[in-house]
Image (cartoon, rainbow, N blue to C red):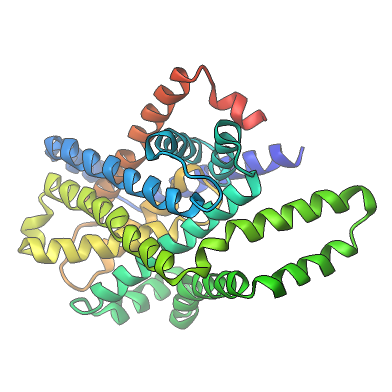
Length: 344
């Protein structure tokens, strides 16, 4: 019952966000921008995103290596299926699907797998925050943050704190837990001591799997490598944003390729961080609104809201649809269905 409520709550939120997105743009002008776009740029753009997912797989391989060395080619379908599930299911259920799928395929603990996926999300957020910091060298982000604050009715300082602090604190806590291995074990013993007898053994196993999952953070070398691999993950996705920008002739608006790349780094970061709340499938609605408003409110150049809306719609479709198709192909190959995985 609780699962059904979450599912329909996610669907309802998606519909509300899409309605808000549609009501705050001139639909006729948006469709005109969509009709004028040059979609040949999507082919290389989607190819770059598929390569980005390959780097995501490499990063996950590094996070799981201490548990079990797994070939990148065996992990890649699992990652794609997980992203497919995230794109069609609310509440980021794709993370649970991926952890279950890897556990059945490779006999990896579900909790350890889920912990490694959680670490991935933190690494993604920190990499995107780094992109925002790089963008701030050329773009006055104070004006953008102030404009976002006025639009949302949220104080600028609170907006910055919400966008940054949770990720930084979580990463710091996970790293401390991984280094304080004995203390974390002692703490887990204290916590599980108060569990009812019938749940105690399960709780102990879960805590042990969690501790196992954060183990890679103990190695500075592995940590540096994880951050290094996270850069191409997002740089290739920025490449998709840039090529869709060419589709909508944004190069003319921003004047040169350098400006376009910096802007797309920023839009990639804000749209993905803004849509990371586990609610709507694939972040639909939030991604479009945050991405569009970033383009519109940027002081670097004036861009029509309808063109920005068309741009983010095509970008998001290019991120979601290929993973859904590819994920379904992998499931067919394994004689599985997404419904079966989710139900389990």
